Length: 578
Ligand code: HEM
Image (tube, rainbow, N blue to C red; front, side, top):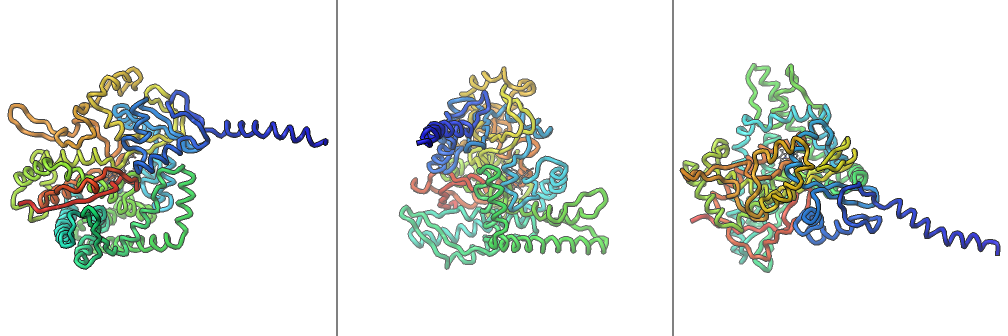
């Protein structure tokens, strides 16, 4: 009898306590920033999950993030469970202005999410560092890699790997036809070709995955699907397998809350499989570092000049010289590894491979673009360019090959390989009149912002002028235009200006907004190399092949995020030009 009042009290208190806890634990919005109604502790997790299921990622047209920007403001907030929130930002003019300033003053720095995501594989690579003195040293030591001198010395290796890909595709197409197929999946091929190029560039010796693939293509397993699409199953080289394993360990880490990503990465790091693959890769890298150091030592002993032709050669050449900085052994290891397997929503081979894979889709769907490009290349490059590797000087002449520049810029714009760049505020940051508190993660949605920077949207963009920062108002579009034709169209002509009097075409890199390499101090450290690689591969493939139509069942534009944004389906049907 005497326990009834307690039971009654407990019965009344439980729902109240439940309500209090759920209210306390519900995501807390930042005042003044739009968001979807918060209906549960999960915040936007169900929307994210649904978009991942339907679109394969959260940034694509039709997805809720994109819809949020289209219907609402350029600032949006997203809740990942009760405690983790993101601010998404998508106004190109303001983004360029704020990121250029704020990354330099460190008001905006690399996010904890990025640090956590790479903490297992490359904890000392520049992508895993805040913008401090150590990061600056890394950038200084690695920067010469993208100077004209080194890019020029790397070009023959990249051009050779592109020619090897042409040979591989000829062999593949023969086998496909012999099995009654019409096209084949090229997704792995671009991974192979870009890993061959990046290992040449960093270590001075290609991994030769393309020649390996070619040597076994005749006997390899091939499946031809119902629409004539063939898939080859090629046994992979052990080093490639190990690199891929490490790369995939990063996996979805950039989309997880920082503490979960950190725990996941640290757990993985100590598993026997990770350690086995990691050791194999690092031993391989250091065998080249040791070799390069030895070669520098011998050249110095003979008073000869050492000519570096790779990243490790370049680093070894400078080591120990007065006035030159060196990286610690573990920093060097992580930088090389980062360059090889291409990280962040960014770096090196996977981003380049993803951009190329999208590029094949866009070209296949636009036969006219292929024809215009082919005519330009055949006219501009002398000495039968289709039967020899292209050269550095040919690839660095926008005045003679403006259409190639335009095609590559358009591929980068439409591929959206790095759909957003994640950064974190370190102090209160004003964005279009809204103050974002310190410690907030911001997804700078570069592609959504650039896609919306159109003449059609001009009135909406100008309506934001009163809340833009002073320098943004002063600089305006910074000499750029707004896109005149719909941004969901693949249209290299948008980058070309034609002189009305002479009819001369010129490539205009500031025709409109496109930020595939990010903005500001932490933008891509390999941009020049990436663009050079893309030009070499696109030019070499276009000189060799016309990409003919692929059945629509094999041509979906659905994307999946594997650190980079890659197409779900990537079939090509290359035929040699008549
Ligand atoms: C199509 C190819 C590529 C694309 C689209 C791309 C894009 C990006 C993006 C968006 C970022 C982050 C920028 C930011 O957070 O603001 C980045 C960072 C970076 N990228 Fe690339 N990238 C490509 C190729 C490369 C290549 C070939 C290399 C080097 C070999 C490279 C090295 C790096 C490095 C080291 C960083 C980190 C910079 C830092 O944290 O300071 N990238 N890249």
